[in-house]
Length: 565
Ligand SMILES: *[C@@H]1O[C@H](CO)[C@@H](O)[C@H](O)[C@H]1NC(C)=O
Ligand SMILES: *[C@@H]1O[C@H](CO)[C@@H](O)[C@H](O)[C@H]1NC(C)=O
Ligand SMILES: *[C@@H]1O[C@H](CO)[C@@H](O)[C@H](O)[C@H]1NC(C)=O
Ligand SMILES: *[C@@H]1O[C@H](CO)[C@@H](O)[C@H](O)[C@H]1NC(C)=O
Ligand SMILES: *[C@@H]1O[C@H](CO)[C@@H](O)[C@H](O)[C@H]1NC(C)=O
Ligand SMILES: *[C@@H]1O[C@H](CO)[C@@H](O)[C@H](O)[C@H]1NC(C)=O
Ligand SMILES: *[C@@H]1O[C@H](CO)[C@@H](O)[C@H](O)[C@H]1NC(C)=O
Ligand SMILES: *[C@@H]1O[C@H](CO)[C@@H](O)[C@H](O)[C@H]1NC(C)=O
Ligand SMILES: *[C@@H]1O[C@H](CO)[C@@H](O)[C@H](O)[C@H]1NC(C)=O
Ligand SMILES: *[C@@H]1O[C@H](CO)[C@@H](O)[C@H](O)[C@H]1NC(C)=O
View 1 (cartoon, rainbow, N blue to C red):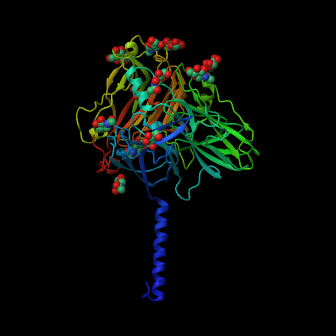
View 2: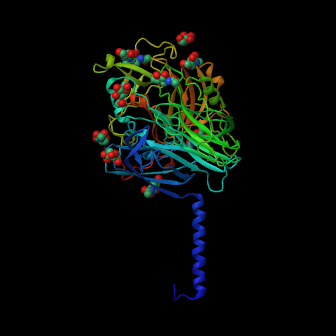
View 3: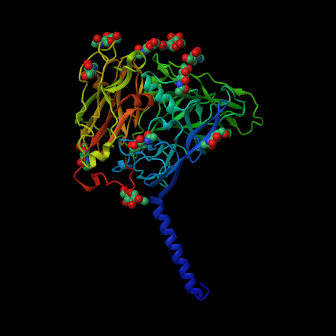
């Protein structure tokens, strides 16, 4: 630049500044965020023993992925381990980009050892907290982390801006290798072992077996300030209660959808669900216990250990200052859960309306539960299986999305039953014959159809709450109840004004939940129980949504680096 005259230099600088400002203005709309996820083994010590676990970038829980609404996100996942891996961006709608959704053999072949895949998606019409996790076998036990979607630049939250935001990932710790746990259970045909502790940000906490009072996650707060906790249930098999001694929460968002704010002392979060709360540090000083404990109101064995952490006021000098304890809710506290679920409403403001489908094109009733099939080599000569409408889903070896896109025959059939093949008293003692059908069946939907699915729990072996997760869509939970859904009387109780909108719903134990969504996302979309044990057993199915007429209603072509099987 030495030879350039001063005035010209000034002009160049002005031009450079102008283009910088222009770039900034553009980036205020949307940018591309680049991430690299190296899947590697790491030795981690918890509960006094060390074991190698699968991690992303050596972290447990894994790194938080940040994006703003409308951003394009590119995540290069590199598999450095001996397991096959895929990653699911749980709750991200993946509009027309099903190739990046992640469930193994549903939308993609696994990323095999020594290979990589670039996930490429845009975050549209969502803001809040979601999670990412491995979506193959039980690898998500340790391969998981938070997704934080900030509102567009300059767009405020519809609630007071918190002083600070903190990600809180709830999970489980297993002394055993979780792949060995599920493989053993599948061989024997019985329920798998349960985890050894619940965790808060990866730690069983100060009250666990083999801990010092210093152990675990510490939430540092200042008196008078308000914090936003972004809480995620990343556990494999347990619905979780979350509490903080001496403090209440104000719920403001679930599954990346704003809610009408309400106060509660206890949160219930099922695996796959997320909850944003405001927490005002309205005590003057001290240390307060955080607790995470299971909810199970059926005779099914769960890990009953309470995970803990501490909330620590800034002016509390010593880490050994008295700790205010808290009693977790009883494991079978159904009334706390129903009260919490009843309080959840969409914000339904002018800016964030609840666009509930008011008419229904496809009215479906799906029984969800377990069954018992013969198995000569199993304990008791029987195998526990999962079912939806009596179909135990068999994973294909060619991904269904590929088969759909390329018209590969013989991979799936599109005859998934719209209603239970046999009517029985679903929540009663059940039919005599507990056997199920096997199949890779899908339910096909035309583009933009409005769909209602009544998810009906069954009492076969035992009723049980099932956290059902739908990929590719949010749905509205228009109704729920105990006992059997009654097509004549139940619809009159539906809320079509401000029902909660989310991607994972806990179907009540021995009851039903009705959800509605518009099939405005072409592709292949998994729906399954987010208890990993039930997914392994076959409590899963697939919706195929055909392309619409316009180019922007059509699935994009597969990326060049899409893994092959
Ligand atoms: C974990 O520790 C064991 C024993 O020290 C060692 O043999 C192994 O290589 C370590 N694994 C990893 C992934 O660091
Ligand atoms: C990401 O996908 C979009 C299409 O949805 C494509 O235009 C873009 O080139 C892709 N980005 C990369 C880095 O592959
Ligand atoms: C499951 O628990 C049983 C009983 O405690 C034990 O014998 C078995 O080794 C455990 N399985 C795994 C994979 O840890
Ligand atoms: C937790 O479960 C174990 C194993 O089922 C049982 O022995 C124990 O009594 C339970 N503890 C509590 C506090 O319920
Ligand atoms: C919940 O469990 C406790 C302890 O096992 C039992 O005493 C109580 O009756 C149960 N409550 C309900 C509503 O089932
Ligand atoms: C299998 O057998 C065991 C003991 O033999 C029994 O406790 C259990 O209830 C049986 N399970 C089923 C599903 O029949
Ligand atoms: C279904 O079974 C439940 C539980 O046994 C019972 O209370 C209910 O009356 C039964 N419903 C019908 C329609 O038979
Ligand atoms: C489920 O399918 C099996 C196998 O065809 C059949 O024996 C059983 O009666 C069916 N049960 C129900 C409830 O539909
Ligand atoms: C989808 O259906 C809704 C309700 O009928 C309608 O308002 C909307 O225009 C449709 N969208 C497309 C792209 O067809
Ligand atoms: C990994 O996936 C490939 C493709 O589906 C499969 O052939 C292979 O058996 C898998 N490997 C393992 C260790 O599961």
